[in-house]
Image (cartoon, rainbow, N blue to C red):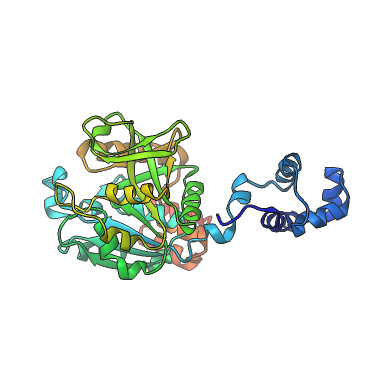
Length: 368
């Protein structure tokens, strides 16, 4: 965030008052101060006491995030997204001998729908899907150009799995001078507060700070790990350590500021010959430009690269959806809520899928 001063807060409070159809006199009376004080607060010429700000937040029914992050800072209009869906998926052989891992089903939808939903939840519409050469046709058959979701999809090839950070080199022209989020094609994220955390990461990226997401695991030696201090500041990042310094795995979701492709090009291949994402994160850490968001209770994260994790994810999604009588991580619903697609488009999608519960849910969204 560029600044958190009286003028910035005043603008937000003025908009909130007007949105609640309140006059300056009504707010002044509620606070027990003069109308001229409200005028000066909204102009940014009067400092706001902590108690006054707390009461205004209650009066206007604001979230703290409304104060901390401006609409401009959290807008994803100029943010690019990448889904890295390469790799050979050998841990899921023989299934993945015939089909890309990211195209197999996780309960009622293709695996790639889940990372796609994360980027769409963040408000990102321009997305590059990086695949293996042999699997790209399957992704295009499934997703096309993204018009059905009101987004813009492009495609690129990763000839061989030479590391996650290679995605930013492959996508350099696509990213341009924009901030960029990348999610791995086999990662599933779910939680009621996820959209809020994604908005925070966008604000960080626009202020030249990268964001990584941590999730507590029982087998940290299998993952990239973040070491944290008592205030959850990142002290170090390490790839699959023998003696992990914490049990917080770095998940497959990353937000980076403008210039990430240039940084990726500066990375030297690791001992296993890959451009490690951990090395890229370490570059930001050394510049004191790396923040961690810890996904605690209420969040679920799956790296669906094994048979067990694939089944666990499917069972979780089935349970949640049956309990709520809803479809989660549904790109059509996200697009509809953003206003990216209209009633006709979602009705067409519902008709195409009318023989299953997914299609019935799309009809339910429109009240039909």
